[in-house]
Amino acid sequence: LVLNIVSQAYKFWTSDVVYRFIFELKHYIMENNITALFLIDNGVQEDKDIKSLEQLMDGVIILKTKEEGAIINNYLLIKKMECGKIIPQKYYLFKPVKGKGFVLKGVS
Image (cartoon, rainbow, N blue to C red; front, side, top):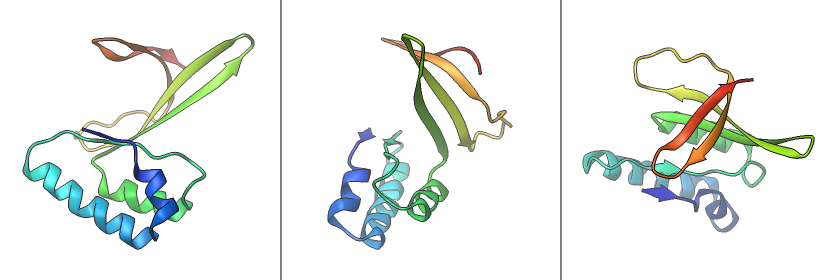
């Protein structure tokens, strides 16, 4: 399940309402063994709201793009992952590949 409405929700409701909704939805998702991806854009909500939502999530991945000359590269940072493994916090160059997901190309 992919939810691309989180940032837009902050435009219409208070941060408390959005947090409670995500909190209840996350518990429903876990009870029903669903994997979910919550997408949040920077700049729409306050940093404290993002930190609160990150605490709710089992994992946090930060995606960014960077222009390097005429090439636009995609980078991925695994900020938090509750899988029991320690993951170095570095930006990884990646390429989205249909049928495979994000394929890591290297470390920046």
